[in-house]
Structure formats: structure tokens, C-alpha cells
Length: 585
Image 1 (cartoon, rainbow, N blue to C red):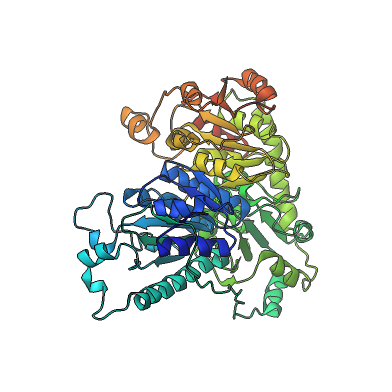
Image 2: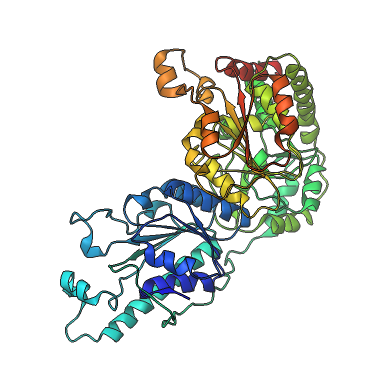
């Protein structure tokens, strides 16, 4: 087997293999050749080549999100690394273990005018779990290193001893950085300076890197369950909000217990991946009518919880944020082993444990409590469900109606990826089959990597993948299609409303050329030509009948991926959505 002759390159491969990290996404380059040689020549690793670094990083993020294990992304030096930043920040706020490994020029060649050279050390400092800046080996290209940086060599140095010190430092940093990725589910960055020659290999690995065992650390914080149970049992109005959550992670018995507690209402979103007929999956459909009511303050006080419990990742609904920031709960607990965001400016306790242990501990101490909290708001829910059905029968074809048809037609057990902006917000308004696994990049809520994330996530999925996206998001990440890993059962739905339709929903936006150019960004690009470029079958719909016809064949087996373009009226969509909230009020 071939190994790079550079010790630090060998060490990185060895450490990753020792930790059971198998998936490696490589963007072509020269400076990262020692890493590419090491990973691609070892059959243990599954390697993927993605040219565009921004797409590659989101591809790796999607894969890590799906398998819930670290995935490696490798790039060359210079601006290549900067293209990883959007995915790194998404991984940081979504707790996804993305391992970024960047090849670098030696420190003495930075800021002297060498090409493809920037200040790479600690580049992601504000949005990273751990950064390991490895030291340059002195047993590789020794004469060159001496020529340009003689200060690296102490007087009367012994090369073996100096290299041993470098090896020990690098091993310690690699142990720390991979521990952070594995234990904390954090994105991490490994930066490695390489001097030329970059392509030299050897048949045997002469190194014996030290890999320290990773020990799970128990939190030293003790939880007073008696105090928590006392508060729980004293509150007649308890609200639970579940944000982004992995499918199947919360025990169904606990969900059933919550669903049948009259003092509890459970707000969920499509990204929560939890379901029960007694839960409230469309938060905005509950809050929007209150905003429009003459009794607004009275109703909001009636909804205001005494105890708010949040868990999971970030929340989509802006209305629930506005409500709870104004009508604060007396107690706000967030359940998470790692961190707690004070989203509503009312956080009173961060309970550092997982959701199942929390419910096991709190529910066994709960006592029966007389409350009409659930029954009152369930009547509101039943009303908007009835009104929604009536509204759907009255409106013309639009984004709103298209989403209702799409959501009701997705086959069971699909993996569903949602793009950001209006796509994920429309999806909140409709029911999805509980068998679906739903994902969305809600860490930073950007539109920039949805396609790449979905395709990366699909690689190891036992079920087919559907991506629903808007036109701007899809065109923005069209390089996500530029790879040979698209599965035949990949399905993409593009809602093409001719621009950034969400901006028409925002208050204060007027119809003008300035608005259409700089906010809405009106476009008339040909999606069919893009599909032809990437060997994707193209279907098109522009009304209810053609949409139903297209969906009748859309999910059938095919020899290549299929994209369904749904054209909706740009100047009508916002009016239909805003009128919906008036209609159900």
C-alpha cells in the first residue's frame, strides 16, 4: 500500500483510521496531495471527489448529519479553504461533526507573495469546536526548510530528537481535535503545512503515532430532580417546544405521556421529527389568528406558559419567538447535554442531560393536575384545520396549494430535505407522514448548500431522498449536482416562483424595479437546460392538474434522478399566504 512520505500526512490518516472515521470528501488540488495519496490508497476509507469546495463541505455535512458520525472534508491551500466556511458555520450551530483538513504552505511562505497562500491557521476560530495547527516536519525536505527557515533548527540539533518532539505535539493535537469531533459533535479544523515535494510515497509506514483512548466524560453538574418535579407539578400551563431533532431519538412512551397531559401543549415543527395527534405541528397557525384578534392581549396571556421546556435545535417560527419574548414564562428549561440558547430571553435553567433521561426522571415524579390548557388550545387547532381545508378549496394555484399537494403525496419512509427561506416555512403549514425523516440546514438557515447537503445525506440512506427547494436556492447551489454520486432514486422538487418570493411576504416591501432587482431578484433561467447538463430527467407543472399528473410518475423507478419544476405565480403567492392567516382567524 502507498503512503505519503511526509510524517504528518501519515499521522493524520493513521489517527482518523484508528478512530473509525471512514468517509472522506476530497476536493482536487496539489498541496493536499500527501493527504489524498494516504486516504485514497487505503481501502478502509470511502473517498469521494467533489470539485467545488463549498459544495464538498455541504456534501460532507449532509453525510455526517445522516450517519451521525464524523465525516472528513479535505482541500488544498488558499481560497479553497474559505469556501468551506458556510458549511462549517452550519455544522457549528447544528452540532454536526464535520472534520475539515486543510493543506497549507509552510509558515515561512505565508505573506511573501506565494500563490494560493493565505493565513489559514485558526481560520474558523469563531465557529469551530477545536483547531489543530500541526507543526511542519523537519525530516521531509530538510534542505529546503533549512534554506528558508534556519531558525527552526536549534544549534547542535539532532534531527531524530527534533522530529520526535514535532511528532509528539502533532499526535497530541490530533487526539484533541478528533475527540472534540466525536464527543462534542463539533466541527473541527486540522491545518497542516507541507513543503514540496508533495507526491513522494513509500510502501511501508514507519511511524507509530500515539492515539490516546477517548474517554466519555460525565457531567459534574448534579440535577436536583425533586426541585424540578416540584415546579413541574405546580404549573398548570406547561409548553414544550421541540426544535430540530433526529428521527426516533425521543422515546414514544414519553411522547404519549405528554400528549395525554391536560396541562401540557407540545409545539413541533417539521424538523422536529416527532408526531402525535395531540401535538401542535403548525405553530404559526395558532399564533397568527391571535395577532389579528381584538382580544390579542387576553389570548396571549391565556397561551402564556408558566413553564416552558425547549429541546432540540433551532426553531423556524418567528411568531413563537416574538410571542415568548413578550409574554415570558416564569420558568424556562432547555434540555441538552451541550448547550442552551436563550432564544426567548427567559432561560432559567440549562438541564445538561438527554431528552429521554429528562423525561424518565421527571415523569415518574409527576402528579395529576387539573388544567384546561390543552383543551382550550386544541379547540383553536381544530378550528384552523377545518378552516384550512375550506381555504384550500377556494384558492387558485399557488405556492400554498402546491405545497399542500406535494406534502400529501410523498411516499412513506422517504428522507426529506427542505431548503431554507420560504420552502421550510410553507412546509410548517401542512401535515407530513410520520414515516418521513425530515432535515433542513437550520443552524444558520442559509440557502447556499441545500442541494449538496441532500445529495451527501442520500449516499448512505437505505431509503430514497427527496429535496424540496426554491428556485433561487436551487440555482445558487447548482454545483451540488456536479458529481457522480447522484443516486437514481434522488428526487428534487423546485418551486419556481421566478425569484425570492419570501421577500414579498415581509412588511414594508413595495412593488418597484428596485425591489424586484435587489430584494426579490427576479429570474427567468431555464431549469430544463440545467437538468440536461447534469443528466437529470425534467418534469414540469404549472397548475393543479399538471402537478397531479407529474406526481403520478415522479416517484416511479428511473435510470437517472428526476426533477419536478413547479411554476407558480410570482405576484400572487404572497397574497394567498397572507390571506390564509386572515381566513383562519
